Length: 160
Image (cartoon, rainbow, N blue to C red; front, side):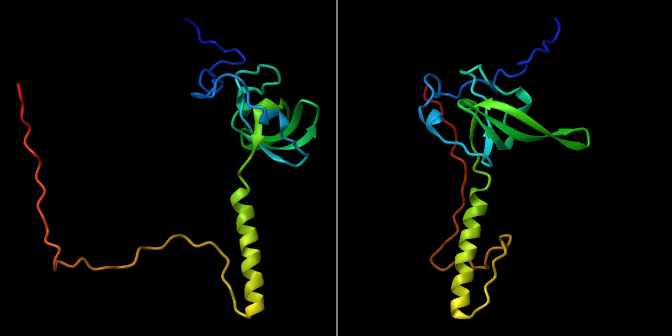
C-alpha cells in the first residue's frame, strides 16, 4: 500500500484534542484581545477546521502583524536549507495562544531594575548576571548516633 501525502498526513496526534479537553471550546479563547506585536504560539485545534494552519507551523512561535475580526496574521521564520525565510500565516484565533516565552525574561528585567535602584540608594555595587548553579557545600556524615545498617532483599515466599 502506498504512503498518504495529503495536507494533513501524519497529524493523527498533533491535531487531536487533549485528554479531557474535548467538547466545547472555552469562551476565553474568543474573548482574548490580540494586538499587533504580540508573541503567540501556533497550536492547531483539531475541532475547528476553518483557518487551520498547515502542519509545519504547528508548535511554532511568531509575532502578530495583522488582526481581523476572527483571525490574526502571524510572522514566522521557517528554516529552508541553510537559511530562514519569513512566512506570513493567517490563522483563526482558535489555533493560537499567547506565548509565555518572554515571561521569565521580563520578570528578571523588573527584578534587576529594582535591585539596581536599591543598590544606587545604598551606594553599593550589585551583581545582576545569572550564574550557573555551583557545586553543593561540603558536609560530614557523623557516625555517632547514626549506626550504618545493612539492607538485604526480603526472600520471596509463595503462599499456595
